[in-house]
Amino acid sequence: MWLFIRCWKALMILTILPISVGHASDGNDTKPFQQLLEISFGQSQLFIEPTHRDLAQNNTVERLPTTSALFLAEWLFSEKLSLMGAFTLPLTTQQILIDGELYHEKAAPTASVGLRWSAVGFEVRKGTRIEIQLAGLVGTSIGSQLGDIVFPTLGSRVVLLRVDGFGLYAGSTWSFRRDTLALIYGIGHRF
Image 1 (cartoon, rainbow, N blue to C red):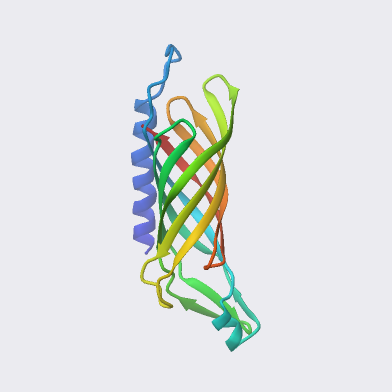
Image 2 (cartoon, rainbow, N blue to C red):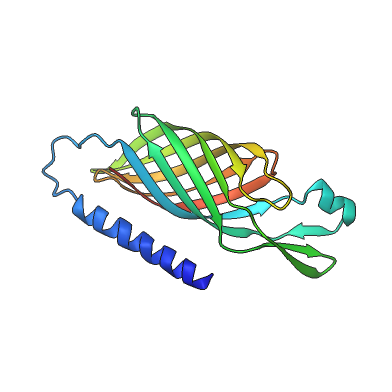
């Protein structure tokens, strides 16, 4: 697992850095080119509520946060709207604390698709803007031990964007039916 994490981090750095440097603007652009695609890599901390099954077995169940790699892809079909796809890949097991004993379960990856809306955006300085984005997605777990379910997700994030397409984001999502809060953060690039 540690080899996968190191390879993933190296891939992120080797993918984003050359693209960001290659598309850097010298400040003489009069109009930025139309960006149609955004690819983002990040992490999420998943805070999963105990299930009814967990609570039926014992009322002192606590699930510890699970770290996941987060991959986002967006088709920017308008200035404020995009079609978004998301994939989370757990990097740790789901840890469950029951009466002081720690148990481990396999954490299932998820895939989601939906719409993202840039609700508010403003320029903070020349060539840099901040956007507050909202998203609604429908997702499914893949290979869950409890069976895969389809679930709706609502999310929001604050994005700091440069005119050359490089961006940083942080936000949160809530997945209904799974009762999962995720804190998300990462970097992205628009092409």
